[in-house]
Length: 518
Image (tube, rainbow, N blue to C red):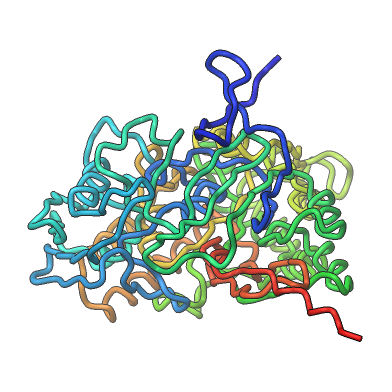
């Protein structure tokens, strides 16, 4: 029997066998807590390492970033209340005073220095390291002041300080007992079951408006909807299929809150593959997929067609960037030009086969089927392979795929173009998981990275977007519309554009109306 791992918190967990601890039996939601349904367990609760969506969402509740982003995706104060750049290669941040970690220790510059120095350690493995390749050193000037020195000017550097701060000395086992300065502290978790967070009454930003959160893992989309209808769960953030959102909107006991989002869905390609390394093949796939139909019928309008990884809200977004139209005839011509003719015209035999890896959520399975049908019409046979998200994510990180579908969550700065498409950012240093390489893109990204003039950077990033759009290492699908489905008596639901969990600290249950007297 395979045992599920769990964390030990005195008084709340009980050991059942030597070396194994489990959340104690009892009510799944303590009094005053809210139950939030999630699709899978976090991969790693150390925010320096956990880059999957669920890990990042949990990190937003346990930790605070050094700097933060507002709803317009602009950098604003966080744990640091101000920052300045005395010269193009220096950034000095000043910490707020009297902020404490959940174990009572005060946050100081030593914690900030230790958090960022890990990314300079060659032995430290993290997908986040690529964001700090320009960082030469970080040092404490005094107890509340930190100096970041850069190797060269880096216009996007402040957004890379939107990073959760961990206590100094946090080692490899920190993922098992994370401690932050955030609005919630970890009570415990059981893999594939739940994460329990207790409200931090001493939170420097004010205590949460609920007693705590139970993040309950329910992988099946339909079951998440049923739990909401039964009242055994309080809310779901962006983790219900559009069909279910539309159905649940008719339930008088539930509410649906929507807002424009930045989450970006795409088809990723492995450019080391002997077929997909040909740009005409990638472009043909782009013309073969009917994105408008996916948005209209599968997303039920809860999305808009995407043209690239940068969201329209970004100051660097190019509104004139090339976008694929639905044009199967053009897709067929491109495949012919690539030397991959259809062996029997419109007959059943395909030009070639590809595998498409997707998560096992209902929506992504349906979307994969639509993509499969679209590609079949131009002679590409697609084998759909579904996985638990953790397995899919591991395969993507290791380049074990031809095609995959996934979302980028919370993209907020044009430096993401570097992290995803620069040739220096292949794993484990960055997010170039498809091994895209283009010398002109590298050159333009480098110029944009070192420039401190926003107008110049905007022009350079526009050229990068133009090249990437036509080279098609990704096929853009859609930008998600945030949709929170919740019990009707909940208040304070204000989802941010990035679709995160930070707003949950403001959510509370409205008191029941007083009984009428007679």
